[in-house]
Image (cartoon, rainbow, N blue to C red):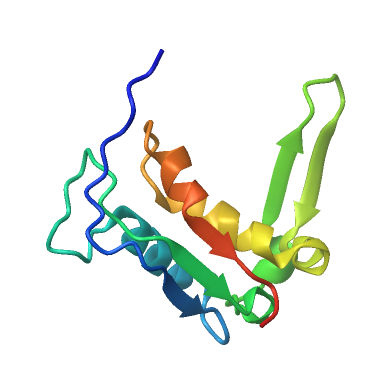
Length: 127
């Protein structure tokens, strides 16, 4: 049984970030920094010291180069031969919020707090 994670959130009002015209990776670092609370004076690396983040206009992100066609996302169901692959273009057509979620997830540290940070992330396609 795990212990509850202490929180040091002083201000719990969400930060709203518009993704319109922003590059995917740069947006992901900005969101990950805000989720962790590294831009706050109350930052502590082992506690939840960040604020919730709302990302709007997920459809309007920009990528550089040929990433729309060359960047691949993979998932596996666990069954033999069921490795699914999808380009960024197809993922953006299907669900643009998943591209941002995947990028932010990769920017966060791989520890027990990552699921709590990701639960504080809300991505909206239109607004």
